[in-house]
Image (tube, rainbow, N blue to C red; front, side):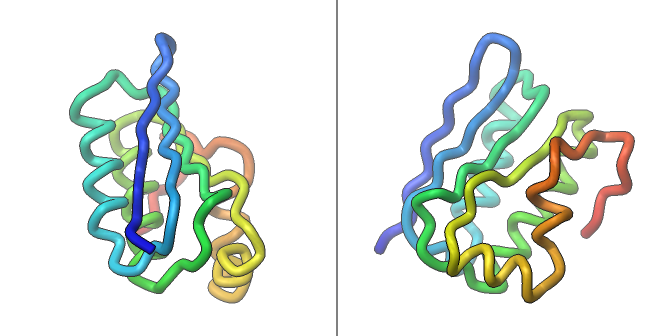
Length: 112
C-alpha cells in the first residue's frame, strides 16, 4: 500500500500527521515532518499511526530523526495509536516509551 500522509494544523500550532499505509523507507514521513516545521508555527507535532500496518527500520529511523528535529525546533513530539504490528516493532527496539509517552518537549534530550 502506498504511504499517504495528511497534515492538519490547528490555530494553536498543534500539527497532526495522519499516516496511512506501510512506512518502508521513511522518506515521505521525513518530508512531511520537515514540511510541517517549515510551513507552520508548530508547537506540538503528533504522528497518528492508527492506520499504519507495518514499520520498517528506515521508517523507525525517520520517526526518531523527526522527533529530534521537532525538539530542536522547540516544539513537542508524540506518536499516538500504534497498532499491534507497529507497537511490536517499537517494543522490540525499545523505542515505544520514548515515542509514545506524553508529549516530549524541547527540554528533553533529542536522540538521533
